[in-house]
Amino acid sequence: MRFKIELAFQGELTLPIHYNHILQGFIYNNISDDAFRQFLHDEGFKYERRNFKLFTFSRIFGNFKMDAGAKTISFTSPIKLIVSSVLDDFVNDFGSTLLRKDSLILGKTPVKFTSLEVEKYQESSEEVTITMLSPMTSYSTVEVHGKKKTIYHKPGEEVFNKLVYENLKKKYKSYYGKELPESDFSLEPVNEKDIKLIIARYRNFIIKGWTGDYILKAHPEVIGFAYDVGLGSKNAQGFGCFEIRKSS
Image (tube, rainbow, N blue to C red):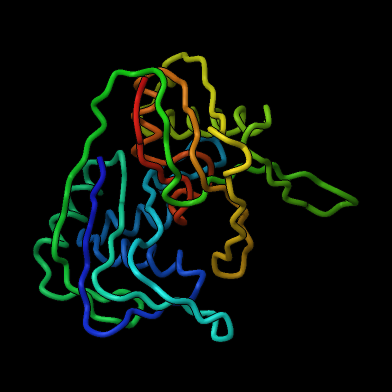
């Protein structure tokens, strides 16, 4: 399930160009259950040595201007944001907190919640066209001369599809305790020339991801799960959120 949220504010909302950690903090700060918030932030759902938070979010949408020298982006009111999760506790708590609070803080700016739309994936198609609302990232970690190196993969490569699908399987198992439904899985750019590499900074780390339109083929339950938790890695850092444009 996901929320389409609209926020309003006075003047401008100015954030660092790389603002993912601020949006993530906004989400955590608006989970009212202290125990659940701490569990989600510190632990999450475990699969072997991996921990998954099982939520994702989009970039901010709205009118903006960038200041390359100051490395900031300034939005005018209103802005929109999508937050998505498979976790009922997350959805219920976060949504009710937004509805209950009179004032919210995003970065250092007071913002006011103005509207909320709830969406749930209910289609049965095995092929959909999707648009990334935040970059999708997939990578391998290898050891070179005794040092770990991160290799990012590109959509359309066989290893990209394999790692994205394996990641979905791990997230599903971490939450449901059972295997993801068996499925042929394919994720291909609609037009390879139109996909765009995004180099983002999350705190002190560089993360490379891809935006654009893709054709996703999989079992309907696999598509629905991906819709809730995101495609690829680093979902809770604001990567892998997508919308469905159409189904076949």
